[in-house]
Length: 338
Ligand SMILES: Cc1cc2nc3c(=O)[nH]c(=O)nc-3n(C[C@H](O)[C@H](O)[C@H](O)COP(=O)(O)O)c2cc1C
Image (cartoon, rainbow, N blue to C red; front, side, top):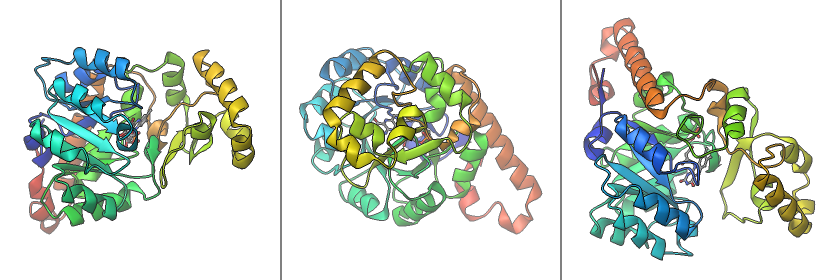
């Protein structure tokens, strides 16, 4: 049962489900799987590893389904030539998160790609619209990986109101099933962007142990902070911090961040060694609060199919159970299920 929205029309996709451009986790294999399932895969551009980006974009050249490539904007600003490399793969969209999109918007538009901007506040949403964003992602603090402090249920309708129908708004942060998609559509979003749910999929480029830990995590076992960034000597600009699963390393250093910074060389060496050894008692598994809703590691296509079926059922259920003045008019008309 299809769910058509402004977002599906704008991206030319079947389902309003986007894969988040997770660093090195969302590689070309996962992008293909999500796009082939009718969603929109977005390749993680990561922190500017040119060789990896060249290898992954090469695997997407000529891919017939719509797909995107995502960058961490402040990191891209240090190596702006990587945008040209990405655009050579002819993505339908480039997604920019965490920084000023203005310096990159003109080349993205000139290449005929859509500009997707992930934002965490109304000011960031205004900045993105001013430089011609075609789609806004409103990201709540529940999100895995980097983000800020506003909750999804707060930031999504705030950005929907600010966009005022000019561009579709996509919800991100804490969504892992069809109930989440249905709820976000009710808040006025045109779709969802999911990271953590797709991390625990067959095609994600993550370690099996990391995926297993996401499945085993219960609600409330993720933390947002700076410990893992500082343990890698990675200084993110304010207001961004990272959400990850809790582990021994995080418990050891939470509340002792100043000492961690003072011993940065030693900790970074130990951290890199543990990461290379796949020791997730030390190394981070970046994941969001939705980890508590995730219990399996299916193929990405199954995740997309399940979410759409569950959301369509929820939307249909609401239509049938709500008094008639609450359905049919206004916002509900923008979403067509069935
Ligand atoms: C492992 C991981 C890595 C991420 N890396 C990036 C990234 O490189 N660039 C980016 O824009 N967002 C990144 N994010 C955040 C996502 O874009 C998105 O906002 C988030 O995954 C949505 O919340 P969810 O994890 O609850 O689905 C990452 C998220 C995760 C879980």
